[in-house]
Amino acid sequence: MGMKKAAQIAGSVMDYKPLDEIDLEKFCSPSIIKSAMEVYNIKEIEAKVFFKWYGDYFNRIGKYENEYYKGALELLNDLKKDYDISVFTGLYSLQARQILRKKDILKDFELVGGKEKDRENNDKYHILEALVKNLKTKDEIVFISSDMEDIKVASELLLNNIYYDFSENKEINVDFIRNKLEQIKWKLIRMIKIKI
Image (cartoon, rainbow, N blue to C red; front, side, top):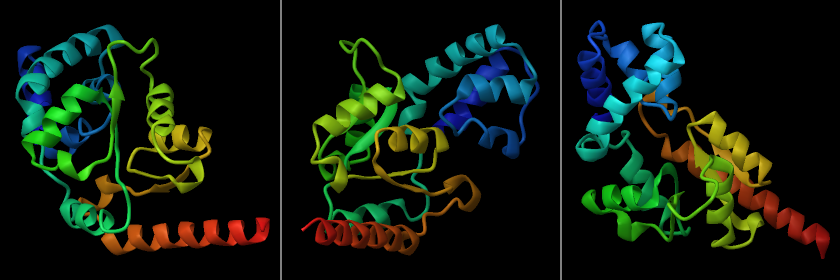
């Protein structure tokens, strides 16, 4: 995976000890700086230098080396039959589209929401808020993520959401997510019937 290789290269450049697979897994998360501080027991200033080296490799090469979680393509193919799917990412939208295009799945997504150079605030809340504004009503959106920070942001925006811990399973359980979506859909239908 590109994220692990970026962490290995950044660690090597900074002359840190080589990492085992368990520690490398910690860099498959949205907070590389926090992971570096934890894994290497370093201060934030050093972790930011680590992040620069990490980003140098990842942004040029590593982002194209990432692999799908087992079951990810099956989930995508299953969901796109019944749902419009969009991407939410902490990357710049342009980067995300490049990755999706290279993986030949950009066509499967309605929108890609990420950082924008012309947006004043590019934190996750504002990225997701901007994406939601371009989609249907909030009641029709279901946010799926393996990142609890993302789930909290979705909850703040009052979005239906499904948390799925990919890091534990290394595999996506399509039936689990499909069942959760059906439960949410049923709940929404009941809410609409009650309002009528």
